[in-house]
Structure formats: C-alpha cells, structure tokens
Amino acid sequence: MRDGLRGLTTRGRSFLAAAVAAAISAGILGEKDLLRVAVLLAVLPLLAAAYVGRSRYKLACNRSLEPHRVPVGASSRVVLRLQNLSRLPTGTLLLEDRLPYALGSRPRVVLERLGAHQASSVAYTVRADVRGRYEVGPLVIRLTDPFGLCELTRSFPSTDHLTVIPQVTPLPSVRLPGEYAGSGDSRARSVAVHGEDDAATREYRMGDDLRRVHWKSTARTGELMVRREEQPWESRATVVLDTRAAGHRGEGPTASFEWAVSAAASIAVHLRQAGYKLRLVTGNGADVAATEAGGEGLLLDQLADVHLDRRGEITTLVQQVRQRADGGLIIALLGTLGAAEAELLAGLRGNGATCVAFLLDSNTWLNLPPKARTEAERAHGAAALALLQSGWRVIGVEHGSRLPVLWPQAGRGSQGFALRAALAETVAGGMR
Image (cartoon, rainbow, N blue to C red; front, side, top):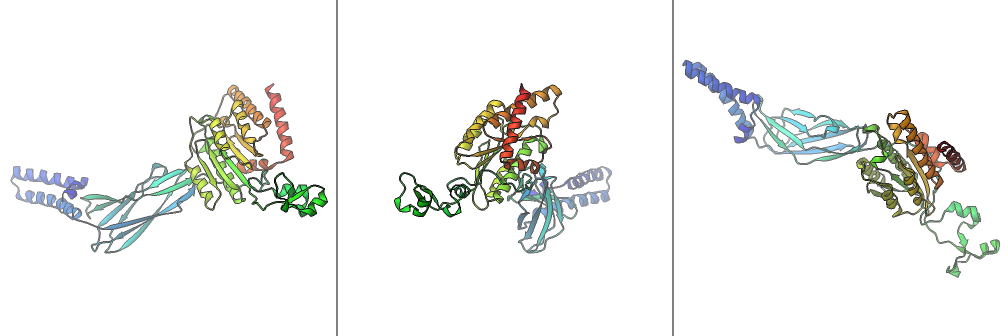
C-alpha cells in the first residue's frame, strides 16, 4: 500500500486535495452531502493505490536488434517481446525504452492488457548520424490503474548495444603494389627471373641441403639451383589512421577526421575482400589484425569507437607500426603534417614496404583568410614534398574530395612516379 501511495499521480493527489477541501467545507457549512462527496473523492485514489500496489506481476522481457551493427545514417529495428508469466492478467502497461540522445527520443508504447501467460511484441526503429557504440535500455514499465490516479515504475536491468560504424564506400578494383609479401616467396618475381618452368627453384645459398639441388635447372642456367620449399603466398596490408587532434579540423560528422575514419573503413573492407591479410593501426593505441574470418567486423567495431587524441604524436604512431613491420603495403590516412613530422614517416619504408599516403589538407575544412590560406597551402606542400622525397606515394585530399575518385592513384606504377616527380618540382618551385 505504501508503494501505491508513493505512486499517486498528479491527478490522484488532486483528488485527495479536493477531498480534504470538501471535508473542511462540509464541517464549516454543516453540509452532509458535501461530506459524502469528500469521502468519494478520497476513496477513489486510495482504491487505485491499493490496486496498483498489490499487483505483483511476473514479467519477462526480451530485446533484439536487427541488425546490431549499422553504418552511419542507417536504421536498426528494435523488437521488444514482453510475456506475462503469472496467472493474473495485467492492467495497462506503459513501456519506455531508455535511449541515448544520439538515437532520438525515448519510444513509449501502451499495452492495454496481458492475459495469463500471454506474450506481446512491439517494435520501433532507431537511427544515428554519429558513429559510436550506444547502449539501448533498460526497459522501464509503468503500471497504472484505468483512471490514471496511481502509477508505479518497474525496470528490467538488461541492456543491449548498437554499434554505428563509419560509412563504407565501394572502391574500384585497382592493382596495388606490394601484393605479395610476408613469409611466402613472390610468384611474380620468381616467374620474371626464371620462367614458368623454373617457378619452384632458386639460387643455391650457403647452408642449403645438397639433396635439394635441381640438376636440370642447374644445367640450363649454369648456376647451382635448388628446389624451394613450398611456402604460402600472402598479400599483406597495414591501414594507418592518424588520430592527432592537431592534424584535423572541423566538427561533427563533416569534420576532416570523420572523412579519414570513413576512408580507413572503406579501404580496409576493400582490401579484405581482395584477399589481403589486414592490420589496422590507429594513433591512440589500437592495433587490430584481421587475418581470420570475422576480422572485418573487428575492424569496423574498432573504427566505430576511435576518437581524436589531443596528445598524439607522429613518433608514437611510427613506433607502433614498426613493432610488427613485415613489408607489404602501408596505406596511411594522415592529417595536416609539418615537414619534420613527414620526415619521421620515412622510417616506415623499410623491409620492402610500399607506402601510400592520403594526405589531408585539413585547413580546407575551415574558412581561412587569404593570407592564412596561402601559408597553410605552403606548409601542406612542404609536408607532401618531404613524403615524396622519402619514397612515399602521396595523394592529396581536400574538403569535398571523394575517395572512389582518388583511389586509382594508389595503384599507379611508373606513371605515378612520374607524376610524383612533377609534383615535387612544382612544390619546390612554389616554395622558392
């Protein structure tokens, strides 16, 4: 009964206040009929409190998200299944699922009645325009009487999580450098040196077992040749995301950092589908290897939570990448760099790695005055030149750039190097 009295609504408390006022008036005026009205006004909320307070329903709730991982701007369907486990029918139930602000307003659904052992399902949709991991729930149930005089709240402790991943953009098929790397020998390199018939042999090295000598190839080439042990061919790639707050500009979903995160997700998914063994490294400490089935989901979940690091440095990012450097292809999404920071990235060129940089001119995400714009462009050009001179392939990114249009530049061979040299001369001339 105490719970019921605590749960009196504004309407119920108003009834009690009216009852007290009517009783006082009846005593002053000596009107018995008015006293009867006061009793009636007092009895109604008390009966409602007793009815709701004594209700002991056994309810079970199950929540499912379809799907539980969605890209930015997409919707997910939340299904709530409520079952009455007791033999007594319920009264009117008001369901409210708690949601974070980014997913919209809290949905409210009214269930008039659930019979004994009866179940009912309700559904609603949520949508987020900002990536992240959001908690859905707990479910709050409000029990009320038919007149709305008393209301009690019950909640289920269980919650679920909705993961909003970056927008993934399909990319055109491009033949990339560093396709074969790691523990296996490059079949393309072997065929180019020895021909298709000798694809399983190589030159003799000190310490090789003489029983592996391939005499036919030795006689044809005039050099001692041995059979190679069969080793797996591996296509390896590392996607590097610069999370320095100093390297990015803009706010919200249109910031330069969000462009870089979406590009990292698109490139990672594209390379995974192309058969690459992929590694994702971010400036705030994340290092995810996607070599097995389900690795794509791990990458996207990691990118859903990545955020800017105000104390991040290029030195830390380079050291983290080099901890497991094994050649192959390195694709970096870089924010605004200084010339000294660009020179530090030259250390990633070791072990035969091919390095491609999508260098964001994040100042184009701001409205700068002409003088500041000129200085920003000059600094951006100096950083690009430093990367080019250290052997990186540099692809410039400005506000409004589309990744599918820029992506073919990552696979250019000699033509790409010629363009790089021309760009280097242009930048150097502009700096003079």
